[in-house]
Amino acid sequence: SQGHILTFTFRGAVAFGSSIIVIAGIIPFVSGYLPLLISCVVIGCSQAILFGTMNQLASLASGCDRLKASFSFGFQASGIVALVVMLVTGFGGSGSAYGKDYYYAIVTLVEG
Image (cartoon, rainbow, N blue to C red):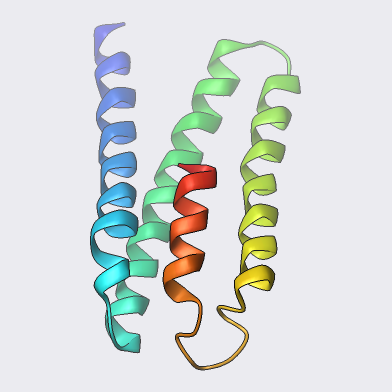
C-alpha cells in the first residue's frame, strides 16, 4: 500500500542521508575523539535503520529466506571491506588519527 512505500522511502532517505552527511561532510573535518565518537554513533544508528528496513523489505518481497540471507551476508561483507581498508591505511590500530582521511575517503568511494 501507499503507506508502506512512504515509510520505507522515508526511513531509507533519512538513514542514507545522515550517513552521507556524516561520512562525507563531517568526519574529514573532525578533530578530537568525542566528535568522532558521536559521528560513529550516528553512522551506526543509520546503518541499523537501513539494515532493519532492507531486511524487512527482503522478507516481504520473497516468500523464501534466500533473499533475506543473501542481503544479510552482503551487509556483513561490507564490514570486511572496512577491515581491509583499516589494515591498509593503518587507521584504528593505535590511539592516533593517522590514516583517518585516507580510510574514510577509500570507504566512501568503495562502499558509497
